[in-house]
Length: 231
Length: 231
Image (tube, rainbow over all chains, first blue to last red; front, top):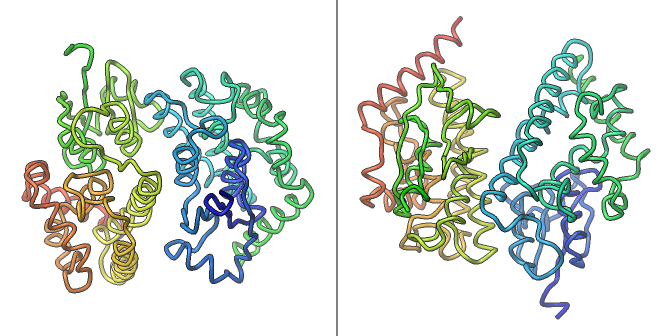
């Protein structure tokens, strides 16, 4: 039985995309092995499993690799249907809302958040302005959420919660590195309370990367980007 | 009954994203009304239905709007489960493959294809090189397709076929506008035969935009981009 359902996750401790898969496996209660990859020296296995993108996360299930974090989350939900809570609601419209907002977070917010972390001066001011505009769209959007598409009115952590957490779970780390508030409870009260509710859950708390280690990593990313921009 | 299942698509005749939804509705055999939008003068309804992106396509089902083409395709498949063929396979791994390659087409190839159409000289040479590299990845990928994830070994048009068609269905138009072959049967024999098989299907043929009208539209897009680049 163990051999029949062998699950291995190839990851990287600081990757928000890997964090999504880790949290999904934990929420569902699926046992797995973890292999930490070194992106400067990619393992032959990683290159074999993900020849298209050569990136983590890769989930290997009974020898078959599945790549791309959002694809993996849907795979997990559709494969382990009877294990743990469902990551997506059953209703097609609610599923559409989960996918719509996950795609918004992934395609609109993630890039802008990293632009803020990697810049300073006027470039950072512009990036912050854009980030706040997009967070405002999300804040408005939360009012339109159907019942049960997020932890706000649903007891279990679902796909949309996982995508939000992968980006803003470590918001205190991000704020420490850039030196100002992003998830401001005055500006974005609904987003702040959604995130706070998630961060109180033991499965979420335990999965966050160590604060100081992530501060060091983001400072390194930021400094590297600033040095390149200055050349 | 008609009122209970009212479906309206807000679209734009030349949009590859709208074409996806149109084709999905036709493949499934779902009757719908169509509203052509004018993106220079967006209708109040479009702004109301898609306040986040303000873009087509929007599918309105019994008064409820669903946005983003890939989200809409999954919604259609999950809502009309007993009407027409399924757009996604049943097997979770095959579903993952469909989503992985759809995402590759959408995120890697679409942008590069438009970069080729909108440039000339050295910029175009670089874009063409990148496009051909990505098409080669797709060509290799086709060999790894699980049985039944595309029309290649499946009688029905599915989600991945629809995404491919939305981008390269009008490849003869694209080749006429840029003046050289993209879907070259010598370079990409598997892709060429996949696309050719799709283009022989009546439901696909009937749905292509008129050749000369699309040539005119793409030439206009190309010329506009070249003029902006020259300023």
